[in-house]
Image 1 (cartoon, protein in one colour):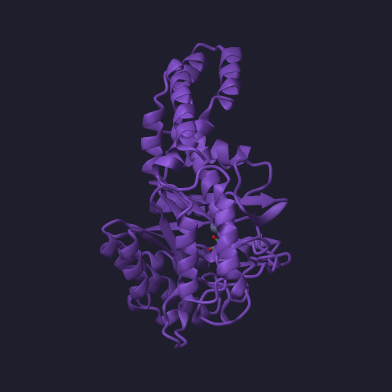
Image 2: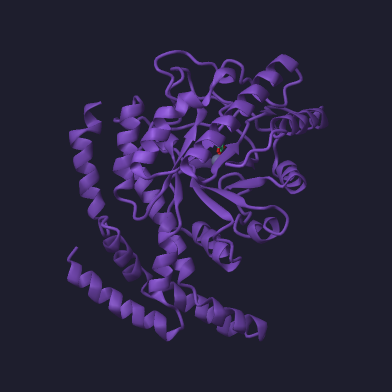
Length: 416
Ligand code: RNT
Ligand code: ZN
């Protein structure tokens, strides 16, 4: 798009916003400081590099669009390609199964920081920081129960795995001079009516306490709940209630995955409650369609509400924004770009909200005025600010990235 046109659009937008007391330059500055944590698993349908086994643990990818990353080099290249269309500086979120195992089979209870040495070097070269996840799915010992397994041998295997993952995250955080956020999600649950609910939850609680017994300074733990997994529909050990209580009593970060709640529940509404009792929140921004389907995030009301709530809670420094979806039915690099840019567009609109006036209306009981301004704000020229933000960051403005991703597909991914 022509630069002159973008600049002209921005000047007009800036004036419109100034008229309602909003500084568009400041909003762009704030957006510049927000790093998304890009989930490595969109590039290869959550396969990883440990083994060629199937994806288990109640999660699924659907689709077989050609060109997925088959190895670490391809995955890194795809991530960088995607990042080149996403304005700003972002982080990369790794799962344990994406380690650099050098062609050897390294079992989960054997993982060490050295298996992520090349990732740490690569990330430093790219000026990107890393986040991390333990991986309890897609393994012969996964079954239906891992950390909550009554079999001590299996439970200890996963406790050891998760402890080692924390050590990996600590090393990542130390090296990058910024805490590595390590997420813990286990699929533990059961398909049918369960009569020992308390037992498994008690075991999970004990396992977690054992895992978290070591204090680290360069990593932060978060725990993620969900409603149910495929094949594990009747009972989820790590439910929302479980992890909220756990996070509040242990002062751990709670991860809110936008696909992990009942469809009419507002994830945005959870922030202000949680932030009063837990230190920080990690988000897994996703798009559930009828279930936790992990469709590509788009700029819809759910994502907008979530971002607005972060700003309204003045919690930009306490909320980490990660993406978590895996669409195997479309160009996977395109999927990264769409979801990341959509999240950023939502954040930008949140940062441009005339909050002071809205709050004054609310305090004065002026309900009509509050609703009217909320509605009018929707059609303020935030998109001209977005274009300007892309221009400033040297990334394609508007739909220009479609053609570029098509070209990469022609030249690279379609040949895989
Ligand atoms: C699963 C959780 C979890 C995973 C990733 C791969 O329902 O959302 O976060 O998607 O760890
Ligand atoms: Zn998630």
